[in-house]
Length: 179
Image (cartoon, rainbow, N blue to C red; front, side):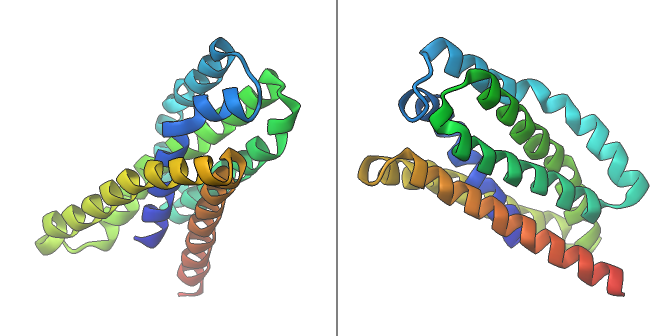
């Protein structure tokens, strides 16, 4: 659940501020930033692939792989920001989208597998409430950080949250393999 909350925090902060980040921190034009932003969502069809992959190899390996991809791509986005190169930034936005969107259906399947049917509705309601809370707080945190210390530190925080989610997913996978 903590990995899911960390992901939600990172993802919602990213989508709330990516175009502004790209124009202010990377110097992209509004049109280029909007194009990069749209690429993040254009790859959402990956959910079909990751959902199927999780049916074949299990949820945790796919959760780890998708979160790992999203984390690596977000780190690359922050590192490549000074280049101002819309092609590089677009490529890492696509990779971030592949990991982020690919994670969602697998996360849902994994959570459903953990919760007993007798308490599934209430348990998933709690999880969804936590996700919405993290998603609501994230843009405010990113906005405050962006105004006080700049966008790059704020985006490093988002990358750190994704890295934490990835580490937790990896620990769950290792624990599952030991059993």
